[in-house]
Length: 68
Image (cartoon, rainbow, N blue to C red; front, side, top):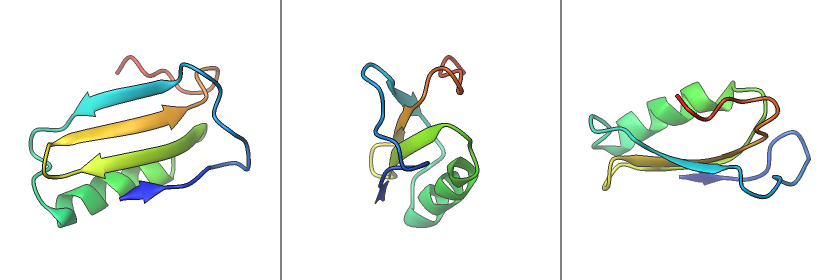
């Protein structure tokens, strides 16, 4: 479930973070995570992988705090 650029801008360098989501273990769960990410301002791209329980996000670090 990879999604393309957001806000019409290319992501700046160094703004990719991987998050562990242990309870995301099926396509439905990944879809719910994706739906939550869709509404985030400053998000360029995300890749939710239910087989690994990880989400990789690309974002504008002047808008989003990726330390969560």
